[in-house]
Image (tube, rainbow, N blue to C red; front, side, top):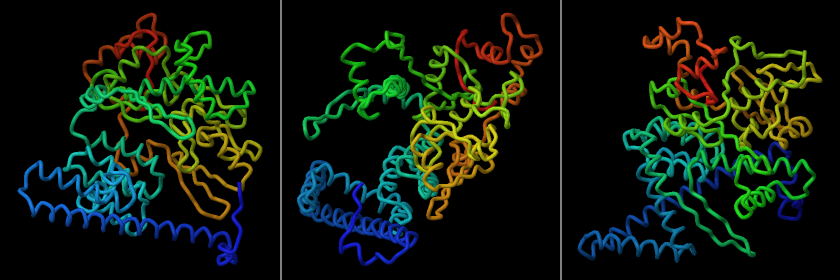
Length: 464
């Protein structure tokens, strides 16, 4: 890291750290306001220019296309942009000033950044107009507490609730766009784009991460990012594609499926860890193929402990599964590292009397685990799994599990438990009253039989 020194930094040299950070926040809001002003001027120019051009000719589709082409070329040259970039800026300006005006207002006052606004515009494009106002309002509220990347992930979940077309129909259409292409980069490098189904993408990434972890632990000096690239290359070019091949890399895809969806009572989307909503048909197919089964919340039915207190430092496998699936990612503000690759941290340190209980555990990536213990950040776990971070400069940040976040910001109601579901389903009452038929010996296996799933099926019940 290079420390910036020189006369240009002297003017604010007498500020304390807290005031200096507040100044950074102020300038960030000023940047957002300036970007909003630029987009407003661009939208006004675009309307004026298109109107002027069309006034001089017969208004036909061909004339409109020529006018638009002229506008894009004029804007690109004036701003020293490529025409694709100019077109995107005009589209963004048009959407914010004519359709998503609340988002534009948020940008104008510096409440959100341009990147947040771009996410809202992009995700709103396929939301029906009747639902767009609610969609925009909920995302604006969420944008105040998360990064653009996390906002995009949240927007996808909200979009599934508000979109009238089923996710199955949209997925079938989207699958037709599968493709691979390469973009050249500088210095002899290139980027491969691979468009494929979300479940396949997650399986590939998990296989890569698993192999990378093994190689890295073996002392390889390459960076983790470079290892990911090299491992994926080897999978493709050297034929290391079999999950159970010589390298014994078995990809893991975690899908959270509501019980009522799995047994066919409805077709609400399931959740693919690290991606978001997937259609019920795909989720059932993955469940039928999976080699193992796990419940998200462990309860007294199978005797698995929810808490170890001061008896043991290391959480059980069941406890880790609960934390990983509940947290989904590292719980430091805006970190997107998948929880399955994170460490479990005792919020109140074990050395300070902390307990190995679910309400004292959270997923933290290695970097943020070190930040918590070594760099002056403090952490408190509140009710419902809310984590309250306090930075060395006293700024407070809270992160919440995904389910709680969706309930707070998107109004997502808790789904019924399995018992409640079956109490309201008369066709299952006779099955419930009968003893468990052999060879079923556990409630988990009974659930699978009830669902009609084959032996060895796997699903994660987020409602138990």
